[in-house]
Structures are given as C-alpha cells and as structure tokens.
Amino acid sequence: MRVREIEPGDKAQWAVLWQGYLEFYQVPDLAAEITETTWGRFFDPNEPVHALVAEEDGVLLGLVHYIFHRNTWCLENVCYLEDLFTASPARGQGVGRALIEAVYAKAREKKASRVYWLTHETNKTAQALYDRIADKTGFIQYRKNL
Image (tube, rainbow, N blue to C red):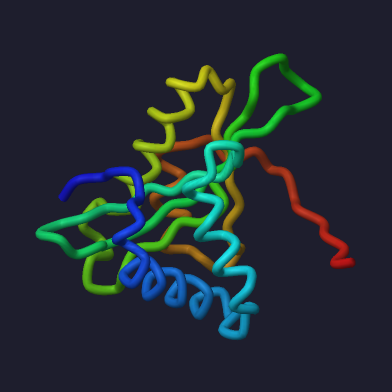
C-alpha cells in the first residue's frame, strides 16, 4: 500500500469511497453539486482543500481530505483533517493510520502548527486509533446549521 496525492484519473474510485463515507455518516443525499465542487477543489492551486488516497495494486483503499487555514491562537496555519474513510475490506490493515500520518507529513511541510479533526462520539473503532496517534482535547463541538 502507498499513500499519494489524488489524481484526476481517480475520480470513479474516489466517488465510491466518498459515497461510502457519506453513508457511514448517514448523509446519502448530499447534493451532486457539492460533490463535484469538492472534487474540483482538489485540483485548484488557489484552494486550501487537499486530498490523499491509499492505493494498492491500482485499487483505492481509503481517502483523506484536509484543509489548511489561519488560526487566532498561533501565527502558523493549522490543518483540519476533515474527512477520513477506509473501504470495508481494507479496515484494520493500517490504512487510516497511514493516511493520518501522511497528513501529518504534509502539515509539517507547510509549517502548520497542528493537525486536528472531529469524529462522532459513536465511532469507537476510529477512536481506538485516534487515541494512539493524537491527543484528545476534551472540546465539544456545537453547531448551528444556517
């Protein structure tokens, strides 16, 4: 398995992983326009949105999307790991960890001061990994959809 930057030719396999991620979080009806815009952002040099994929023998096993942004608590940018998903057959094989470690490396390259992410409180499998490779901050997210 190798982790690499996403390429335009990955769209069909990425879309399957993306749909699996949306279904995992019970969002099967995300507007097609959002998916298309997200895909396009990965290849726009003016966008802070990036994507990596884990691949083995030409098959995508997982994806991670991440965003660099400014922060009011430090001078350097920070990196938000927004989406992480591993295909069912590849779970438990280190794909998630490899993708997170690759984001850490990209963040170091960009001199970001930290990488952070959220997960649902019921996602205990992922939390078992996260507890080994990052610090739990204790913060609770609040949200108001507009």
